[in-house]
Image: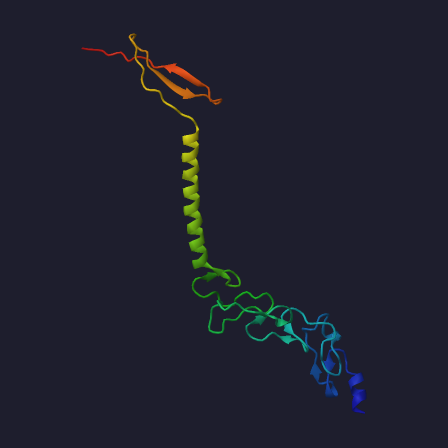
Length: 173
């Protein structure tokens, strides 16, 4: 006689005399709940734990509550959202991000090293290009005529052109 009562529980209820409600965490809703045991017949929604699809325990989240909250979540219980794992009370000092998974101290050191390395590389490449550019200066050349000084510099095709220096005129008062 008791067995027949289980067969006729209204949808969403289960157990002796149909007094227990199926979990709203059953995938597809409470209609996918076994009317005898209350076990969800398909699976659980995210944030619920099988077999009865109860809400995740503290410090767990995700599908079947299989993921742990970050140990860097703030607050006394270090709790996170049972659906997506974002920390509910912020982050511990030195950590940031929704899940407090960004170690600011570690990344600060990395960014500092990258900045120093990029500066050294920039100046090294600049010095290398300058030294390899072929810029040559020839000493001031004088012969018997005035204004015979030349300076030699490369053109874009590395042909050297001699450009005469203009003599300076001196004025006396």
